[in-house]
Amino acid sequence: MKERLKELFKIQLVNFFLILCLHMLFYLFSTKSNVLYSKIFVILSALSNAFMFIFVLTIINLPFIILTKKLQKLFIFLSSIILLVFLLVDLGIYRIYGFHFNAMVIGMVTTPGFWDSVQLGMSTTLTSIFLILLLFIFEILIVKFSPKINFKPKYILLVYLSLILLTAFEKVGYAIFDIYNIQNVTRYTKIYPLYQPLTVRGFAKKVLKIDINKEKGLKITKTNLDYPKSKIIIKNTAEKSKNILVVVIDSLRFDMINDEVTPNIYKISKISQNFQNHYSGGNSTRFGIFSLFYGLYGYYWHDFLNNRQGPVIFNVLKDLGYNFKILSATLLTFPEFRKTVFIDIPESVEDTFDTNDKPLREKILVDRFKKFRDNYTSDKPYFSFIFFDAPHAREYPKEFEKFHTNGKEANYLIIGKKNITAVKNAYLNSVYYDDYLVGDIFNYLKEKGDLENTIVVITGDHGEEFYEEGHFGHNNSFGKYQTKVPFIVYFPKKEPKNINTMTSHYDFVPTVLDLVGVSNPHKDYSFGANMFDMPLREYVISCNWSNCGIIDNESVLYFSYETHKSLNMTLYDQNYNEVTDRDFINKKKQRLYSLIKEFSYFYKH
Image 1 (cartoon, one colour):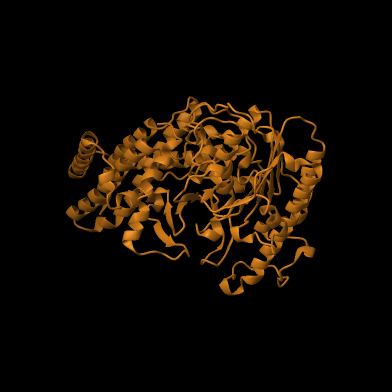
Image 2 (cartoon, rainbow, N blue to C red):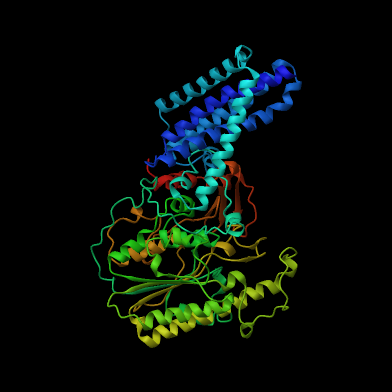
């Protein structure tokens, strides 16, 4: 038994160096930093991640030491070669597309007609076959000649202990870099497959009292992003004089715009461009707001955060002389909008209060906007963003309880479809309250005469579900109640219109930039289109932390873009019931072909 164990450790130690070589190829194919400590971290994380693979392989193979010697070697060989081939295939995907093996890749490969649509070429095919055969030969030789590998037990133990210590050092090191937001390290977490960083931000904030939102000001010298694709060119500036006000109400879903729940917004919609088939780019705040101001799929959020990359829209508006006022009822440090969306205009952000009374904060936002406008003396236009949060917390002043609740605080551990009414009514009341505040802002603009030269947008960052399709809240489905939101655009002198063409949050940026005279094609900075000249669209994309949904008028194709969730792919009908018809599923999966290219489009290759 002791000899079997020794042999297992010897084989995995040799495999470690083989896996490390593959990891270094991932490093070579990535965007490399000029900063020394960044390079050191990336190399340490390669060693750490390679060891984690070996550690798992060792654990998997431990039970087989009780078998015959031949069977033990067979299981070691099979588990090792499966891992090595997986890493090689993933390396190819990373080299071409810039991301790792995920459900989208599986979905494409398992769709009939894939190999007719994708031609790798003879050279690529032969090279792939050669490399896989080479791995097989290496692994056969390692397993066969393992008894002749003369590693003394004490040296094997020393190497394993060193790798354990190095892995611990790397994880703790990353945690420290993460606490202090040192992005020249934190942005490299996606180089290696299945890499798991260690984060202790909550512990650092609560126990160690460290300001985790503090930036170290370290400038990123290189980025893996190719955004925008070309220099932004402004030619026609005919519309630049209009002010732009964007009002976002957290969790405001599409069916809330009516005379009962939102009488003020409902009236505004009657004199506006009312986009009635509109979807957020995410089913949570982080990804909804990201898609709104970047015009990109939420899939890109992680790398834009790691690279501290701001959106094109604010740089363009700054160049045109716009002034900014960003008002939020919640701190914009989490989600990390100060490090992404508003990173280039930090002086314009107001998101702190002297009160914990959330409904009062909503009212303070209105007062702050009025003060900003009353004191505004510039002859240049302004861009303002107001973010209301009441429906997310389902809080509101008592006088706005239009819909009956039981007056008790909800116990979310026992909430279900049968006792959801009171919770939903609290949501309705909070929407009703924010509607009152939006009406106050709109009437104020009217009294000031600003509606003659101000574009007003009213929307939600995502929806909110109350078991209409089997879920509660948001961030857990891509059904219409969590992703479909109102999008109302009051545009001076434009005839009111109800628009049923499918639109998305990522259409907002191209629309604004077209209005202010940007001449670049939309693909230079966005996946969207001009909402006032919208071509017929078959589907939209909505994402969250690790999943995306391809949404059309009859179905949602749900899939994961994380490697460890590669088998997560499900098709739902328009009522969010799972579809089992294979032909229908394969038809929808065809869309993955173009999507996989778009998921790598704004990365450097």
